[in-house]
Image (cartoon, each protein chain N blue to C red):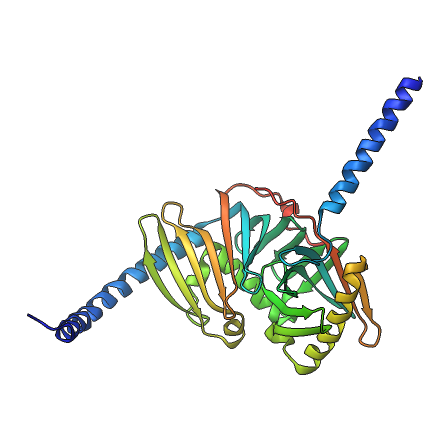
Length: 212
Length: 143
């Protein structure tokens, strides 16, 4: 009879032999999945949905839940609007960003503000799934469940690393759209954004993205 | 005519009662252990501003608070010990994580923690030209 130690060694050897095969298979599969999602993102003319954002605060052991609406139009128009419990609107229209809070409206030219350019690019790419092809910013791995593709993005840039330890995108297999985004922070907080009532390729009034 | 006036008066009293009970049912500041409060926060710094939500709770005599921006990104985590009248900054977003910013924040948050229980929601740091606004946020979240 094998001792516990011997069994452990054998198991380790079996695992060592299997690992490269699994890794290879996963890499090939990953590429196909990423291509599939990117293709769907590129062919998406517009998208609108409701969202629920749940921020978990480790210090308070409590969640803050916010609700809102999102509108996206190819290739660089996005409206991200919080409706409850506070109102706040972020509109990206090509190179301009409008931030609306109460009576205050601020317009920012993203070409003149590096930080905002990054935020705008990240928001847009995460919402539609384009960030999966962004190898400069993230180290990406993809797994699969019966209903979803789960992409784990590990930030590579210093600025992003300071904010997030990990970003997980959950992609609906049938619609090939993002169903959920989970952003994990270094200090243990995390934010989950769930996209609901997704409508694809419907006409969106131009005023939705208007920056005055 | 008199009956009409009376019914209008009754309606007004009911309306006032409902508004006041709604106001008092919200916790303005966590005074007791387990109590929580939520504020809509705006920090005006000269031409720019930071906005978001501050959530507070009292736990074992200490007020714990997190300020996050609207997108859910953490800006500041701090605690306030009322018995020692001391604010401790636990985390600050990387862009603001400088010793002199932490020092200003510590002093300003201490003054804000003195004001909030009295229902004063704006604090101005005249030297640094920073205006802090903490408005109680009504939690009317519904899906």
